[in-house]
Length: 523
Ligand code: GLC
Image (cartoon, rainbow, N blue to C red; front, side):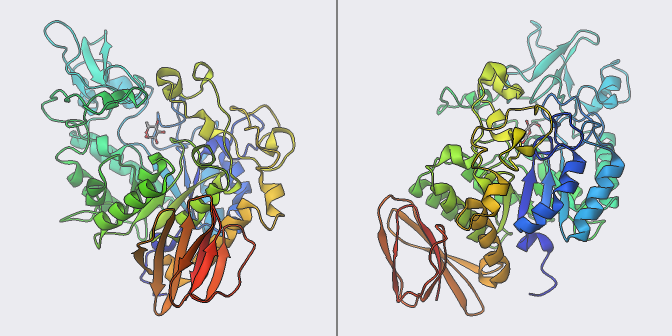
């Protein structure tokens, strides 16, 4: 492979929720040292980079996505020295480290906001978004917070409203203010200078709001149970004019350091997601494609997302795939039993950079937690509880799944007797072994990492595609149905891997694929 290929094109990114990975100081919360201790596992598993949920000082009202200092480390998670050590230990194992960076809002405990709310004349007043109410005193417009209720919070002290797209303790920063921008760019430099390899940028599409603060129109397709803010179409709140200039500026800052990665969270139509590679100027290396996290497990729907996304990315950029993450239910809760294996094969064989959420490799399901007991503020306020996908990593079948010596901050999922690293490591047919074998195959075969992609037009319930590179050609074919189906393609010769891990024999132009089975076959 040419050494001009940037590392993130061939990388698989392992997404770690820091509070839930491994607790070394017996407070029931995962910590940075815990990740350092588990680096050998991560390397053995076979990924190339880790993305950590926010580690900055925070009141942790939204699990760290409420930052009170962009230049430090939350004591519950460790110290700056500990983070430096994690970065250097990761690098010595050839693993990259990506931090979550949350530019849309800070915590209301950030000194910037304390200053901003102290008086209307404070120099940092304009670092956040303050507005007068309407003449009758009601909020300035109809915008709804992702966590429910108005985005506007009244502040008695200065007699104005401030904006928050999430909790009222997460005030939105004003990305139209150049001094605030400069301070945030410095926070990027601070971490990149310490050797961090890049950022996953949170809620990126929301940074800039309509300059005139116009009301969002109603959403004719709104259904109860969707997020409260989906009552409206986000015409004036997402992907507003000016956002691309800001992302281009972020990229310019990141490019001051060699080989760094900017990936961004975007909830936009796929065409707009793809626009974040940049038009005139480079923007994100990887605008994250989160669509499959929210697509119900159905062959036709998955195929149409895969086809549409590939078509929108075209030659503009390099694709990304995520099937699971900290905001959406886990795969085992979304697809039937063995189909988590199909999902694994799909994630690791499509063309592009996958993000893999911790615990998916052992099929963690998560424990249902009633909304009124939720840790997650979204769960408590809207019923859409994210706790089940955030439960602690299951290392073995001992007490607390060996995540911690004490009661963990969220309950251990009750599948830990079988869904755990220790038992599955020794089992040649486990889901963990399947992930490892697929990761290995992906590393070994240029066709599967950087290779070309071509969709195979197969009938339901099969979904398939061909990957190829310099004469190396493989077909990936997944059977979403319950019954066996024959797959025929002249020239196929050998099964390289089955999701059942029970066959790797030769075939002659045709192979039977069992219900719920996926195969990679070579030509
Ligand atoms: C992003 C995060 C989510 C968080 C929200 C507010 O969507 O993924 O977990 O609650 O931003 O920061």
